[in-house]
Amino acid sequence: MRGETPIVPNSRWDVPVFSWRTWVGHWEDDTGYWIVIDDLGHPLDIWRSGGPPTRMQSVSLSDDSRVLKFEEDGRWLHTLTLKNKYEATHEWFDLGKQAVWRVEPMNKLRKATEEEKQITQQAAP
Image (cartoon, rainbow, N blue to C red):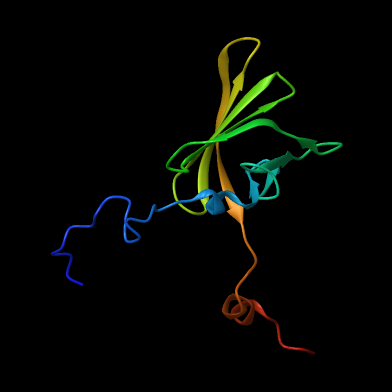
């Protein structure tokens, strides 16, 4: 338990910090742009905000699950890179201009825990 025995690569103790499951959920930036990632497809299904919501194509995930890439209508290449379980950077690459258009932070939204709900709950009148 003190780390004196080295961890054997690819053993059950050599687990990655992140996996494809880390991406599953609702991600949003500060402008209200959102993407929803679910695990119904292979490797993942991704939908973005807008009217109507649009399904992304050519989804790929890096071997270490830190980088998620997908295309939008042949115009944009999106690259999301995890900073931790709840934060990622989102790079928009314009395929026509072959240039980065914007890089922004995204946050994974999650349901409040029961403890968090109790802290913020108002007493009934």
